Length: 200
Ligand code: MN
Image (tube, rainbow, N blue to C red):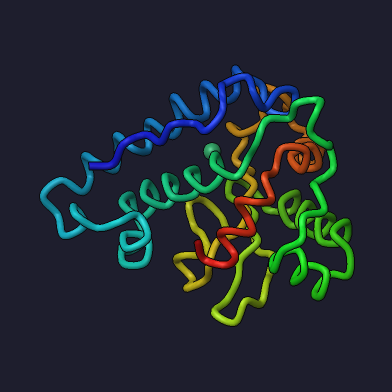
């Protein structure tokens, strides 16, 4: 049985980047729906006692993969943010770490990385996710995948993801997906990304 994760911040903490109304629907309705669906789909199957990562790696394309993937993706998404309060710098803190060092090595500047990430998210046709992912050697790449697909299904480690399904931004940004993606940097918690990169 999978359960809905708790948000590590209050429902209005990400305003104005993500409104409380969007967060209530996105977490409380959309993600809850995927959790309920998956629990029904895996009852009595070989997937019943697997982790989300195992299900995503082993399930064929179809409803079980889609619902498990969406739970995994949203769990990573919702736990990578921190409140956009005035006392926190709007630009990501220049914290030292292996991830930011690797980004500097591969992209030169954080801004160049962010631009490519936003473009990759803006150019995914339809619903899906844009990812920063790492291979076993720590080499980074940016990719977008449709639907519920994710780096885990491709043998890669997920580091950062922006949700480009319309339910993630439509109430706040309507059709302005690029504006939403650009705003998300204000709430990214880089310490979490560094921990994911080094495998904590
Ligand atoms: Mn979503």
